[in-house]
Image (cartoon, rainbow, N blue to C red; front, side):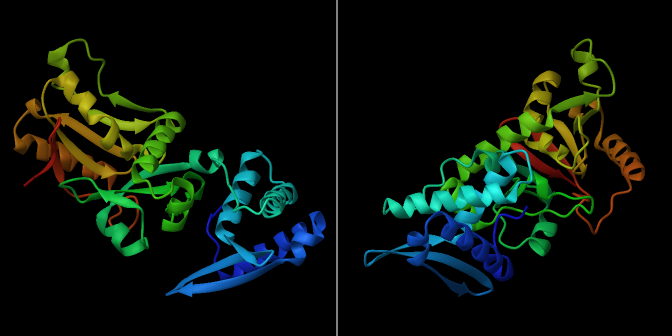
Length: 298
């Protein structure tokens, strides 16, 4: 479920919430009105409560995020109970003459994950993403709602407004939460093409970074596992970011760049990446060194 309202959905949500507020407290309802504002193409709705001559203004998106949290966190699709909980939250806050406190919204936060995408894809298809470069690569990480991924491989990144509401604008808090969610929910692990018995074998092993669910979040291994692989092989690794669900790492000691290119070409033939959609990450090969990061291989 999208956690930010547009004009149409805001009007629909406001009408339902106001009805629920009136059922709970006609007095609070009688002193509440809605207003809206625009900023460029963005639309904002507010609930305004007359607190004895001093207005308390509440962004409708804040209430809608609480509603989504109550709806999804209950494990059911009971929209009426989620709407009632939201109305009760608003009524109590206004009765106390305070701004609405949303609490921790743990369910919403637990469904935010980082996804690795091609930088050009993000630039062309995602408006104002909360994201960051993976240094020296054509890759970027973007934070999305995990339940926003569908079979068409579209993504819904969290918006700046959601970011401010959920994490108070703290990028580190968002990153820490998202990575923790990834480790807990996706069971990321490293698969190898052989059972490693010793360091010599480790230096001649191709590592596939994947997750047990074979989801498009497998590319998170780029951020999670490369240092670990290098500590096993005791050398840098070449990285083939072929697609979000197939990332390969090959120890530098496996051979020359010519041999690495041959391996890469075979993998590309097998994968047949779709260059114009989400599932294509990069045509490049990178060398990853611990504590240094990525360098493109010409």
